[in-house]
Image (tube, rainbow, N blue to C red; front, side, top):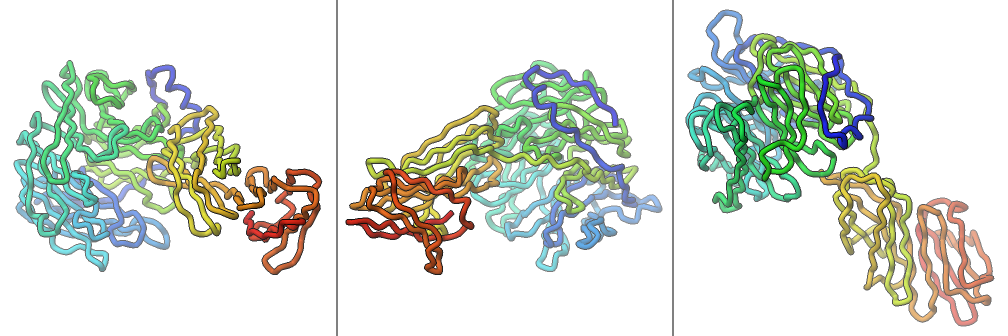
Length: 554
């Protein structure tokens, strides 16, 4: 493994202390086809495992018996190795496959495969048996160049976005009805040429955009499309770079900085090759530029070491290697790719079901190559919670207070409340700090709390939708007695306030057995909850004018 030199802003070097990524030596699978620089991954038999598909072009030379087919390599559910491929042909008239993508194009919950060849798409729809029948052939436009599958117009359904080589347009096939898979809509592009595109939420946006990179020839530029749910083009903006030396073999989008926002990543070819990370679409230069020693190629982004940040995978065009840039340090791994420039010649997926993302690449001369990820997975908690409590206030509200020491990829907190510890409702949401290492304090006041014992917890939600829960804090608001009960899960302490010397506090288990009791010596009583097993208990407080019981969970 060879470390490459990166020129970075000083502030980014703070992230480089995390362990480097590692991969086992590549495994090669012969394809017996040609023009095979196109690969995608997905669950192609609906068994919950990630599989691989490679597309091949026309070849009449003997020995290329798999030409004009897609080769679907299913993951064995027992050994988790890739099985010999199932072969599915597409029209023999095709001379060159130009793109491949995977995703649920007809929105039936199954992963489909789309192949771009010449001016057409071959749409292979997965059936309930986990196989593929004859493809649906759709005219897309003059020379399909790149394909992506995603929700283009933010209606909750997947669509197909297509870049066209010989046309200053992008094409879209909307997925709101399987019948409409044969209807293509066109939107103007700023330039025609060797292009790539992505469907992604950029920056703080909660809606998808199409990012189209015009990366060949003079005046390279990046266009951002917003298409409405009515399929009309709401807006199209672009940035034109001040130099003609930004030729690229593709783009990728992902959260490189670990702040919950997606950036655009591109590879600058030939003269002073480098990787650019572009987070501000209003500026004409990247905010981070990584100089590399090998020429750039196809790009992909995934979290390879479980640290919450996107790592950049780049197939080195003509240099027999894959470069992985993790936490802004670059490493190379040998892989047979003598000359590769197609944007979709690399894919990332867990192809051996070990919970880590692997790299797969396909080339015309060497076949399918797999790099299995052996990186020790870094376990990083989304937040470090050092305090969480819910306490009643004099105005009959409940003050919920929590403190974090650090946060990673944290979008927001949902404050949840329950009357029984089982059924929960959200009473408020509070924005997190994203990724930060300093202490943060949060407060929320519930102005309409439940009477009696109620329970509070936090639901912490990442930018990618993953979530986790805090421990439960209990609080009591009783009418007429002025007694308040709260439970601090971090200190494992029950606090009972508003007591008088004539009161006795008793705790019963759910069988009705008295397991703890004491007299109130002062208005505030602290009970160490660690002396009890976790579960449900009844707290009874009796005095001259008081006799009530409440359930408590700790």
